[in-house]
Image (cartoon, rainbow, N blue to C red; front, top):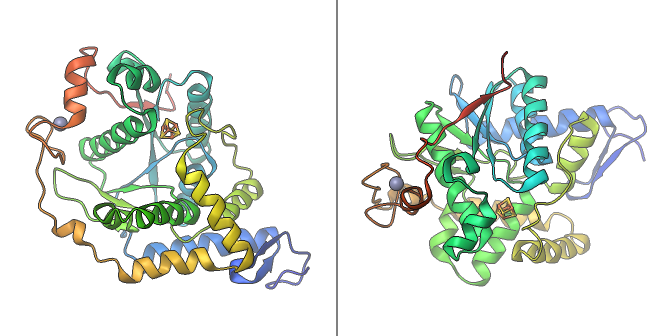
Length: 308
Ligand code: SF4
Ligand code: ZN
């Protein structure tokens, strides 16, 4: 197969777009799409301070690289979840990318603030590990963005993540969660940071090809708690549909974007009396957890790479 742009041997075939490209043209094709999505949906404006949430996986590390490569200067934020070697390895990949980009990354360690890793904490609180992890991540992302004065939080969710989450919410008609899936969620000054997802329209396969061809070194192991997650089943189902009719996933999420209003912006919000972040009760879940398990140290965001 030949590259549609330059006629050389093609390395990547993107069925959803019915296009084959060589490595070089594929990299610029993908970066251009991220750049166009960012502009079209008003994700990050010129001069805004952006903070990418990086897990150490291919999507978030590639996104961090792409943004800096297309002229959006972005720092990183990483949470060390205290999941043994998996967390240490993730941090080292993140730090490596920070050095490659010459950008800083803020890192917070659950064990330092709460005295234990995510799994032990979940056990003690009798909660599901992933659900607790999601709650803590949302809180810490918001907190670092507000405390460190960033204008926008950037998440590395790709097309497959979004399509499967959307399918899950539709299957059970969880309407209250549907609005939260938007490509861009506005913030509320001092309470909630704006959140955007520039990879919303880019598939997992495309991201894997990008990371490989760009030589991005990422954690290949799955988090040990990911196995059995419902989203993996939805991804599998959607992949089967995609195999039969290429382009289904992208049409699915584009249809959602065209129809979804941003009612999240209009929803009445209640804020935690202690931290000021959105909460359903007087004190948010995380403030209650901090009160019960906190080591007494403040929630700290350490800056990497370390200098001297
Ligand atoms: Fe957290 Fe679960 Fe994801 Fe692991 S799989 S990082 S525990 S949400
Ligand atoms: Zn709170």
